[in-house]
Image (tube, rainbow, N blue to C red; front, top):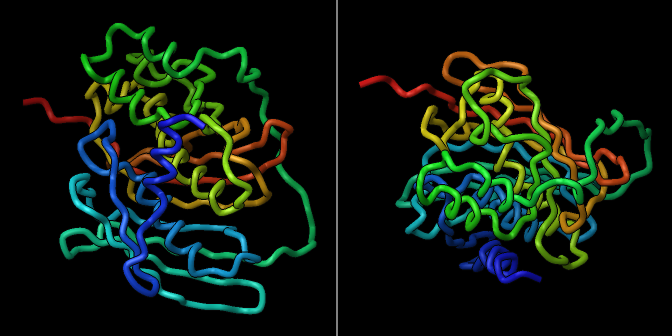
Length: 290
C-alpha cells in the first residue's frame, strides 16, 4: 500500500466522540476549501458505522451547503432515521464553526435476489495503455506554476488515468460533453464493502463536472476560466465492486444553464458489470471581467 493511500485511509478513519457523533480532519486540496469528495466519504463512514454489517450501502443523496474550512475539524452527527426489516436509513450533518456545511442521506439494504439487467459498458481503451496521471499532467506546460504539484498531491492515493485530454489539458474549443477515466486506489484495500463504497465516493467528486467544461471549451478551475463548486451529489450502488481494481468512470453532461452544470455518470468494473450510477450538479460560472 502506498504511503498516500494509507494517509487517506487514516483521514477517513473518523474519531468517535460519543454515540453517533464523529470527528474528522481534512487534507489539502486543489482549491482552498475542503474537497467535497472527502466530506462525502467521511459522512458515509459515519453513517456506515451505525448500520449492521449485513446491510450494504445502496444509495446516497447529499447537499454541499457551505465551503469547508480545511484548517478546522469537521463534526459528523448521525440520525438513525429508520431500521426496517430490509432497509436502514441514516441522515448525517457535517458541522464546522457551529454551522452545517454538508448533509447526507444514505440507505443500506440486506442482500436480496431479484430481477437483474444493466446498460452495457461503453467502449474504452485498456487502462494499461493510457498515460499515468502524473505523465499526463506534466505534459501540459501551460498549467500555472504549482498546479501540477497540487493535483498530484491531492490525487496521490488514486491511480486515475484520463482516456482523452481533460478540460485543463486542451481547452478553447467546445468538445463532446463526454469524459472517461479509469481509476483504482494505489494499493490493496481490506475486504470491507463499506470501505470500497467510501473510496468510490471520494473519487467520484474529482472529475464528474469535466464534461460540463468540455461542452464549452473551458479549462476549469485549474486554469481559472471558470469558478465553481459542487451543489449536490447522488450515487446508487448496484453491484459489488472493489475500489482497488480498475473501474471505468464514464461521464457526460446533458445540460448547463442558470450558472449550474449537470453531470451524469456510470461506473463499470473492468469485466463490464455496472457497479455505480452517479449524478451531480455544480455551480459553473464564468468570471466577470474587471
